[in-house]
Image 1 (cartoon, one colour):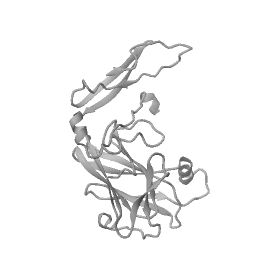
Image 2: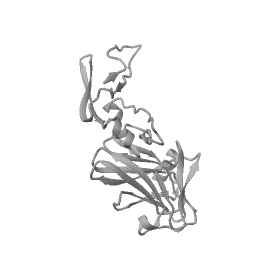
Image 3: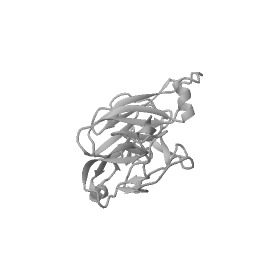
Image 4: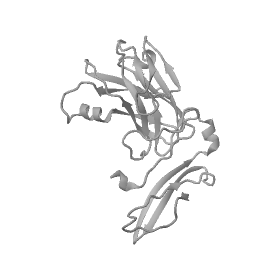
Length: 258
């Protein structure tokens, strides 16, 4: 481990200090390791468990898509590996919309909803994802709130050839500031969550299907063990083309999760 400091003192003038802990990847052995960072002082002892996964530089170089790390996979929706138009509708990039790169929206807005045989009939966004973990994981799609006189905005997610789960967003304003719609408008995003099953580690395809037209998606996050606390999506995961140098992840301990 690499530490920003190995000691120090606190007092009235310096009530707290932030300590940065990084993995010394040049010396870290390959594989999965459970490690603990222990901070002691003033008669107290705090242990922070960490899960270090080092698949080696060769594995990163051969990755073709997003790579799981830090307990999550975070994807900007505009960074799809493939877009497939079907049934006279398609996904399009909308620059200047969303919080980072851009948003993806289905068009045209007059396209009919698609409710059956989505892999064959619905416009699709495909993302390559390399998993190290296995299990049933929540996947959250961050859609941009928009109204619809039919009362719903729907899309669907699937992993590989698995079944597609339809997610339905609220699309009717009730006028009540305490309801979900008001909260979504204040946050500028609606979080729609399903689960995907990763049976084996390695590369998989995350698939996003249009169900209703004119639905806009900003980001996608797969929780594989606990992403760091964040108001919205954590930093985008490694991708050899779209994000070869991902941002550092800041997590200062369990107290921040309270």
